[in-house]
Amino acid sequence: MRTLRDLLADGRVHVVDGAMGTMLYGRGVFLNVCYDDLNLKQPDLVRDIHREYVRAGAELLETNTFGANPLKLAIHGLAGDTERINAAAAGLAREAAGARAAVAGALGPLGVRVEPFGELSLDEACAVYERQVSGLLAGGVDGFILETFSDVNELGAAVKAIRTRSDLPIIAQMTVGTDGKTHYGTDPVVFGPAVAAMGVDVIGVNCSVGPHGVLEAVEKLARVVTLPIAAQPNAGLPREVGDRKIYMASPEYMASYARRMVEAGARFVGGCCGTTPDHVRAMVGFVQSVSPRHAFDTGTLPAPAPAVALDPVPLAGRSRLGAKLAQGRFVTTVEIVPPKGVDPAPMFEQVRQLKAAGVDAVNVPDGPRAQSRMGALLSALMIEREVGLEAVVHYACRDRNLLGMLSDLLGAAAAGIRNLLIITGDPPKMGPYPEATAVFDIDSIGLTNLVSRLNRGLDPGGNPIGQPTRFVIGVGVNPAAPDFERELKRFAYKVEAGAEYAITQPVFDLEQLDRFLGQVEGFRIPIIAGIWPLVSLRNAEFLANEVPGVSVPDTILDRMRTASAGGKEEALAEGVRISREMLAAVADRVQGVQVSAPLGRVPVALEVLEAAPIVPVGSQGYTPPT
Image (cartoon, rainbow, N blue to C red):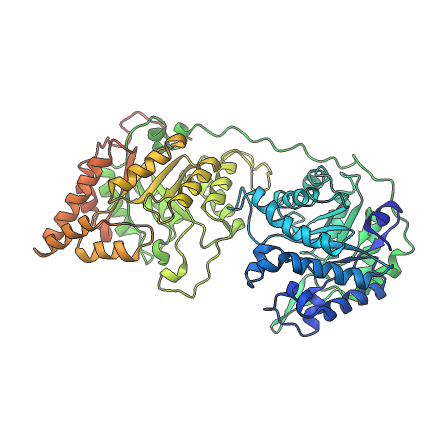
């Protein structure tokens, strides 16, 4: 029986199998089926595909377990079967391989982002992978192949999970896009040495792009690592044909590139999406005549020096708001929503009233309650240029992927936007377009990490961006969260990620606020309390029952009920009294307030702020950064 360790030791070029998913789909398995569960439900089908690859000449089979981790299996209600599915997959591949091929247990990404751009910690990711590794070992694999990773940190968690249970060989493969870099923007000359240092046995590239892109990645890897290299490209980039994605690269084309990859330094070649036994058979014919390359050109393309994080611009030097926060002074802001149409004039008039009253900044929400309005970034930019009052941009993760957010933020920094409030965002189902698609590529914790890196001159992949950004990083927090422990945990993560101040949900209950402040005393950043003037009983009931994260005590509802009996004006007056009382009560507990302008009524917000210690903007002798 051949093992992966045997293949590594003989110094020869070896051909890995091709796509399993492509073959299963071609056999009529629908895409909504859990392909990993087929190891239990249709074992003959999976075994037969493995045998086809062995007959085509593949010397290394990958188990049908790319998505067989508990997180992905949970989508199908199969998390409890993780070990059984992986063990069965390993047994099927082992049976099909016989004495002709080795078997590697396949592990893919978890399907969620890990720290620092996701909520899942690396230790938690490692524990998830350990369950998959246990099943594969029980089924008799010869080693492991980690595939299609974009995040070096996540791949490291998978390597750690394997090494806690086994010393079998590991093939570790990252994936790159058409720009030759990972999704996080990491170049092969950077991730190559980083992955090699993890103690893997083979390093490589697979999936995402066709042979041309993978060849370029192999050429870079061959100059910065001395480990054997693996290359498993897709059969070209897919084309949409009807409702199907068709991979167009022919077996001959794939085989010719396999030979070029070997000549460039690869010792393990195969295929990913779109490849079939025909592609593998052609590769075997092409690479048999190629001698493996032993003399690596290590050093001819040295890895660039690791990017060095710069010291961020001091908080006091980034914005007027940042200066007051850094000085420990009380800040006042008012939230107004951008217009639903294209005319910004009414918004400018509202902001002029705020500036005349000496408010420190205007808060511009980003599609609150999933409503479609003028974009927050552009609204804030127009406000600052037209009126001259600083804006705090609420920036939501809901509508943009990681690359889109990075582009937005770089543009905003170049345009002079300085103050951010980073939020995850309300889901579309809350708004008038419930069928709209949410992105949520990362959440507010991940985005806080991203902005913190930008403030140190680095992009998500650790690449230098030149001059660092100067964002004042704010986050949202809810002292009245139903799951209070989870809220505290997430707030701690946000602070660790780089949050420099926080704005609470509207505060109507001092006991809840005091409980929260007491719990976060150890890692306190400036807290700005949200104040929401109630305008009617209906408004109060709406907040209490239909706005997530807002808690309105019965005593407040009773006061508004009594006042509403006297008419609209008395109800509004009572709402203002409640807000002024709340502001006065929190003034010595927090470092500022954000008062909402109910229904766009700025005078109401300003009446509430009369209870706050307002100092006119610019009177402190502060000079904005250039």
